[in-house]
Amino acid sequence: MKTAVVICPGRGTYNTAELGYLRRHFPDPRLLSAFDDERAARGQETLTALDGAQKFVMSHHTRGDNASGLIFAASLGDFMAINREKVEVVAVTGNSMGWYSALACAGATTPEDGFRIANTMGTLMQQAMIGGQLIHPWVDEDWRPDPARRAELLALIATIAGRPDHRLFLSIDLGGMLVIAGNTAGLKAFEAAVTPVQGRFPMRLGNHAAFHTPLQEPVAEQGRAALPVSLFRRPAWPLIDGRGAIWWPGATDPGALRAYTLGHQVVEPYDFTHAVAVAAREFAPDLFIVTGPGTTLGGAVAQSLILADWADLPDKASFQSRQKAAPLLISMGMPDQRPLIM
Image (cartoon, rainbow, N blue to C red; front, side, top):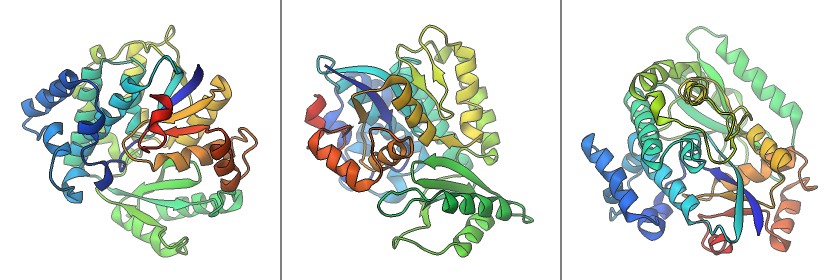
């Protein structure tokens, strides 16, 4: 049996290729029906209808009030589908919105309460739609770190943030990428100041608000008003948050977990890179399992492991070579990798 840290993805991972993901993979019809009932009671389209649509519609499926529920359910369903005779889960973490999925996977909420949290926060953020996000790399195309470039980009963010009417922040430390968030003036200023690289960066993220920044304080306040402490409990598995802090099963205060989830986690930067490094160093798993939907988080996990000097992986080529010889990272959104842990 192999040990594994499970990692839940965030927004932007349910796209055209993922349409029908719940129909194909979700293992518990009763639970999916409960999620549908929660949304129907709110006057929202059910997950079954969204996932079963004939066509993926970017403007509709990627809205926060729709994407959050779809991604949560896909992640939780994949976690439930892991073969526990093959894999021993030793810890759980997630990226950004994936924190809500991680709460449920780790047992810090029931599946139904976790869905309520994810769906509520996604809906509140969509209703407020404060600011936006873009993503820009600081490693080269071979995933080799360039600390000087990272420092330059962070300095640029600070400089732009100091201008009148410009708001700009580091949102997520995502392996070799910086996710940057702010208001329209701040984002446009950043885009104008950097040289485009790799043919696609800086890249605006559609239907994304300024997550993990002080701009989201109104959303955090609404979340605290809507989501009581009774939804939270001690996790069954160690849970690594967006600071790299570990919430241990026997030493977690549900009130403190709620305070982090609906406070710091919403309005401060999310350090996914550090969370992965802590997962590697504290738990030394045989595998890192990224649940679905999508496959885009795998690169950030690999980059985070390179930055953590894990398993003697200096660059992209070495990681790919390791993957071919003995997979370290399993992405459940990839049909050829999913069976390895089923």
